[in-house]
Amino acid sequence: MTGVSGFITPSSRVDVLVSGTPDGNGSQEQRSKVILQNIRVLATGTSIEQRNDKPVEVPTVTLLVSPEDAEKLTLATRQEPVRLALRNYRDEDVIRTPGISTHTLLGGDGTPVQATADTGEHVAPRYAVEILRGEQLTLQKGFRD
Image (cartoon, rainbow, N blue to C red; front, side):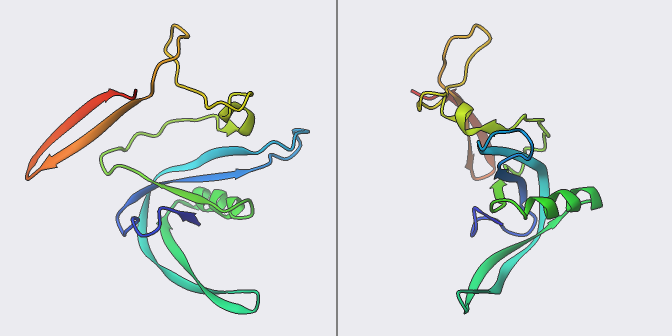
């Protein structure tokens, strides 16, 4: 698994993403999908793998998952590298996503897709920043330019 190595520590929470070409849809287009959300990291470390007849250190992450999630994760590792996305420690929401294709990601004409409001007008993506000063936590929300 690859992702934000070095920042993921035991007790972190991560989302697990996989990308690949779905079987049987007649298209060679790549898709990306969040397959597991808000998963607790039990341990991080390194292991040794052989690449080109040479030992190479690779980062490892041990995740706490259910048997059903372990099946998903095992199947996902047969695709492209599995990616981990670090979650905010306060974010426990599970959000169903349809995944995204390369065509949709690039807007069909090569330009990145912007978030849209219910009116269909293009708006800048929202952001939120948590500011921690001592024991005081402030949430700053806004729009990107």
